[in-house]
Length: 156
Image (tube, rainbow, N blue to C red; front, top):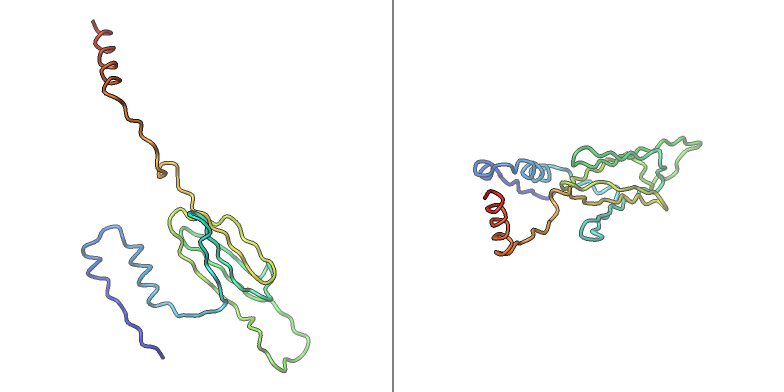
């Protein structure tokens, strides 16, 4: 059994404001068991597109549930199998699973597809218009003088 180092974030809590979610994620990551089933890949496809690919061989579409609440993506699977017979050897893992993925702000699920035993979940970061960079026009000194002159002439 590997020994785990648990970090104490309390000094950071005292001197930081508004980072509670990040500290919560770090603390949760320290205590989560490292269950590696089912295996999955995460990929960054472009600056604002991501994909999670999970190996779910043997699971049907109606045996997998994907939900998104705030910034938490949850993928659950539970096989509904009826066996006619007796297993002589059981090496295929049909056990239920649950995987949780913390998503950054403004990351949304765009679609999910199940094909050839792989579940592909596509994600996209969609920044609100107010958060996107915008160009600010710079006026020249002449434009300011013209406006001032026009206002002065209008009141004369």
